[in-house]
Each structure stands twice: as structure tokens, then as C-alpha cells.
Length: 195
Image 1 (cartoon, rainbow, N blue to C red):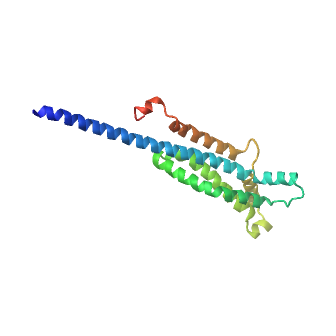
Image 2: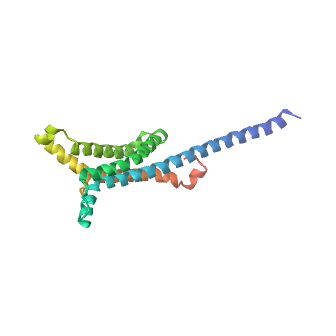
Image 3: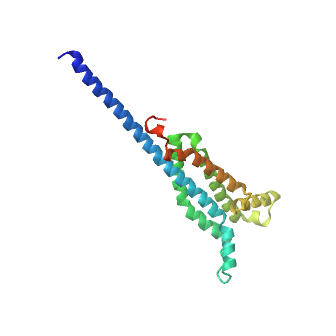
């Protein structure tokens, strides 16, 4: 037996092992990216649904009073608060998905998630400011307090077709869909190359 007759099988075994481990590692990373993309898309869709639902709570309560005049009317603050409570666990999952996206895809990919989170936080802040103001602000409002009150109302209530908050949420959702849908349906090159 010569040295080359031993070296060739060993080298081919070593090369096959390294290539196999590299492919296996790539498959694990691709699977993890698929899972994160799937979770991120689901969390973003639910976040936009919740934002829309929270902002339509007051108009839905008014519509219920029109449909059922004999029923006890729901106060606007109670309708919005109930929907905020329903959305709270969804936004906890949303924040978890946002952190995973930031960790695995980078800060640039997580920007639309942060925009949706800012919208939700702004709605929560407006709800608190609108219905839980201090006595001096309610009794003796300054012009700034009146302006702030109107801003909070526009934030908590849906403003129709030209609503800037709804437009921002839609733009963020569209950016998330464009960024992460490609991970759910990879092209044929991604089966062979780590693209």
C-alpha cells in the first residue's frame, strides 16, 4: 500500500464530510429563517388587525347602539379599553417576533415592526390621555390641552379613508410582506446556493 492509496480515500471522506456539514448547517439556517419569517408575517398581520380593531371600537359601539336601542350603551373609553386588553397578548408576541427579526435579519429589516409598535404605543398613550386626564386639565383646559385632546381623539378613533395612522400601518405591513414573503417561497437557486 502506498501513501497515495491511503490519502485519496481519506481526502475524499474529509471533503464529503465538510461539504455535508456545510449543507446541513445551511439547511438549519434556512429553516430558522423560514420559521422567523412565518412568525413575523403572522405577528405583523395580527398587529395591523388589532390596530384597526382598536381604532374602530368607538364607531362599532355607536353602531351597536343604533342597531339595539334597548341595550345599555357602551361608553367609548370602555369599548377602546376592552379592545386594547384583547390586543395586549398579541402585541407581546409581536414584540418577541420583532426581536427575533432584529437578531436574525438586522435592524433595517425590523424598522417596519418598530413603526407598528410606535403606532400601538401612541394609541395606548392617547387612550390614557383622553380618558384619564387630571382634574385641572379637565376643568381649566389651556389651548394646548384642547389641541392635545383633539390629537388624542384622532389617534384613538378611525378617521376614514385618508387616516394617516391607518396609512402608516398599511405601509409598514406592506414593507414587512415584501421583505419576508420571499423567505416562505424561495427561488430554485436557494436550493443549491446560499443566496
